[in-house]
Image 1 (cartoon, rainbow, N blue to C red):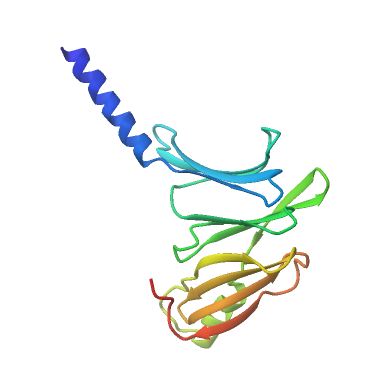
Image 2 (image 1 turned 180 degrees about the vertical axis):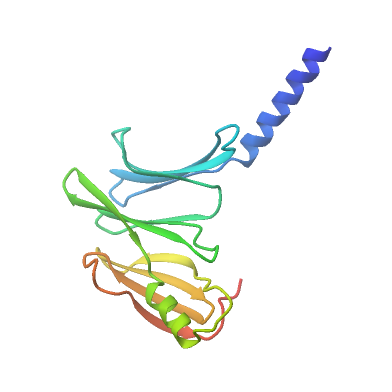
Length: 185
């Protein structure tokens, strides 16, 4: 009887983990690549983790991968299928954002993006004695062209459209303020 109870307890636990698990796959427009994220229980001491990967659809080797914690994740491919922006926790007041891009056929690279970099500097410069944190977030990533990507974002100082030219890593993001208010839910 005890082993049946243990088995049912283990089975119930596995069902709960499976019901709460996340798996999302976003294919590039040409369907040759994909970005995916999924949650899995890595056991003690790690617990549940989120793996984020970019792969060629016909090759199991990762082009890009990172392990995070389960929370909101967004990703968007450019029209040419050679650039993907991935955001970990875009709605959490401090998103971590990457650009995964094809340097030439078969060769990929990645780098961090900080669309809110200039807004954060302006926030702290406006009031050097500020005692609260800059809280950037965004709701949408939208490619305007093969190299320019727009973030629909908000932070302590309002709502913005922030455009990043991913082909020019040294050029600063361009922020257009839409409102002094936060985006409504």
